[in-house]
Every structure is written in structure tokens, then in C-alpha cells.
Length: 112
Image 1 (tube, rainbow, N blue to C red):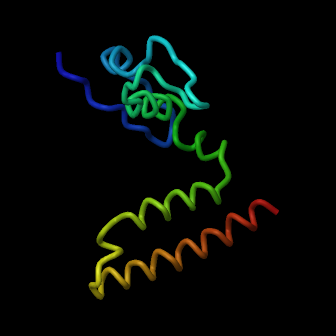
Image 2 (cartoon, rainbow, N blue to C red):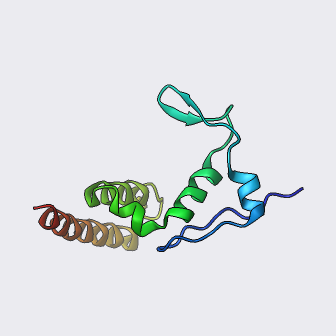
């Protein structure tokens, strides 16, 4: 049997198919060193299923905007296109940094 497609989180909560539920819902959650685990199983499908059911707007609401921005920056900085020596890569890195600076200022304002 082939794996169904991974759940695709959207802004609003959405449902899973029966096949996704069967494939990505863990039979038993365990706590190992403070982390959810189930015998070394890849939890990506489980995490995506939870975010799909929750909706990304609700997920963002539960965590500070600053942390989301830090995560976005860390993810973007891992992309080799931004770390290349090219003129375009340097320009995009500059745009990213300026945009994140503006978004952090907005997040700070909203937290006040």
C-alpha cells in the first residue's frame, strides 16, 4: 500500500482523508526526553496533520510573532541561493533582512 499524500496545512482548519488519518495518526504517543515519539517513526505526517486540523492562523495565534519570524529567518538562511556569492543572492539577502527588520518592529508594536 502506498502512503497517501502528506496533509497540507492551510490558513483555516481543514480535514484529513481517512487514508491520511490511518497513515499519520500514531497509535500511541510516547514521551522520550521531553519529546513526542513513537519508536523512531518519522513524525512529519503527524505534525502536518495536527497543523492541518488546527489551521495555520490558529497556530500562529498560539506562538509569539517574534518566534515565527525567527523561524522564517533561520529557514531562509539555510537556502543556498541566499548564501551564494551572486549579486542577486546578496540583493535578496538584503531584502530579507530589511523585511524582517520591519516585521519585527510591527511584532514589537503589537506586543506592547
